[in-house]
Length: 228
Image (cartoon, rainbow, N blue to C red; front, side, top):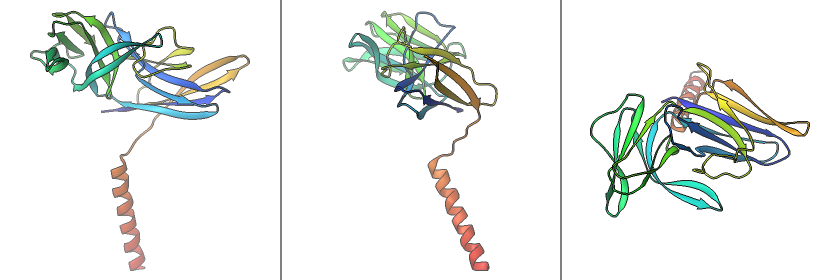
């Protein structure tokens, strides 16, 4: 699966949390939550990354200090076109792969638990959007064509509902063809903070692969020294 990166350069005099969240324009009644985030001190830098692999999730909704947060109780890998059931087993709501199929660009979750359920989907192991309070016998349909946004926040926790808590931004992330890394830069512009985005190509290699490559290079170096 392709990997995407968002780097954050904080060229301001304050600490900021950069949050990345998703919206699904083709689906209605969804709550977008903080999906990827990193907190960076003044004149510092950090970043987040994700792979395009999908998840289904069920969550509990809580108010923490007046802030709405969805905390997942279960997150499972899922494929586009799949149908899932939320059932009540072993005294808890949980997700099971169901029968049938849905549109090839969608994921469907049916609530068969006879209780209200907060059903969602996400990517790279973390829920990103939720359909709140789906009634027993109801269905949550997610057309998975995500639009990505980035913004700066004073305080943010994973799963926090995105509303008026964006302090700077949001800006839409649109990766041009062939580019998978966005660099978000915050800088002072007089009394204002300006947020800008540039795009580039980034690649990653697993640590195990780099170890093998280094081992091969050392062996070749030894062979060259012996034959010299």
